[in-house]
Length: 498
Image 1 (cartoon, rainbow, N blue to C red):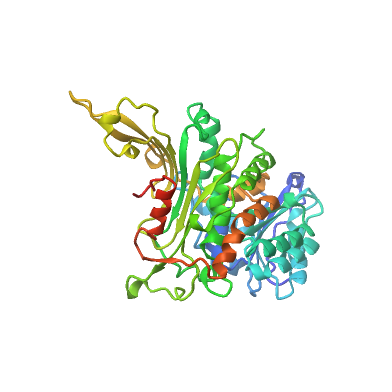
Image 2 (tube, rainbow, N blue to C red; image 1 turned 135 degrees about the vertical axis):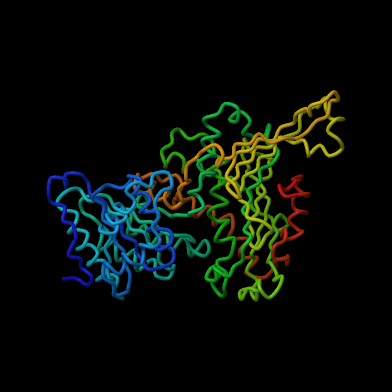
């Protein structure tokens, strides 16, 4: 019997095996990401009925654990939905009973052969589909991927692999990684996951635009003055050392801007796809990325927070790795010519804020200009898609203050999700894992998108690595580098927090 083999392993060779089985393997099962995010997301999908009853969940690690050991490790992280708690304990037990551990040892080919054998035991004789979540360090990725391609793929169904960002360190390393993966898998099998793209704000981009007549005609240079994409965190780097430490620190540009920020802009600015099929959407996204103008160094601001006291000291601040990045991007096509897309991503800032802010042009010949005052920007119409601190859709409009005099006020029409919808918002990993199960690829970067994004950022990263572009220091808990405000003024943009 294999190491950790469970006596209650289910063999699905009865009548129910006529339906396709699904096996999901989490490679790196004892890591923090797997324990705190992946397994809880899988259980949430199972609890809500989005996984088939004959699903098998496999945890693969190098530790000598039994099935029961793994179940004990993850049991404390599983929670039931607030809105339908019935049967929570029973479903928790059922999920854990369908969760198994594989000790892969230090030879991944042998380990993947063990994984394959365990999967076959519960798959029976029906069609068998498999998903492999590679929650492993970048340096182990290719060996794991190659081994599972040779030893653990299903021969009676589809196989899909999920890869965590960052996807390479620069254009060359990313190209080599892509070529190595494509030598073992087809493009349609590879799902490059960025959990930030699973947030509701991202899906709302296309829903608001393409299903509302009030917005779609305005979505161009004719009406939009500028677009801001803001992701600020109020915590520091202490929990993300491997992304910021030298010599191979990924930093905020490789970690956040390359995937999340550029993908957000691509989804926002793309032309209407011919359908909601993942490939149709990705075709339009890559066109946007290819149209982004070369970044100029004077349109970039780097920052690094400095400690505001002993309690905020950070061991990684002896490097030049940026903790803040702001830039002005331009998309050189007919729809967006001349519209600045200002992006800001930073850590150690005054508040946690994730939002997309669309500022519209001034009303031509505005009859109420004298009532607005000297700063006409304060009367700019805005559409704000906010994910944090509170998820909301806001529309800023001008209206008359009640009274006998004509006095204008800028007010927000507010759709606050927590007031409107009395439901628990699913975690982004649940959303993205369900997309992988369904074969929906539109929120995952394709190889050509990946390369194009690196083409945009690699010249900037080269300048940073050669220390020709140095970060400006800013106070931890502050608003970030002063240079970001000069950048906004240069492009005629009033930042959201001004």
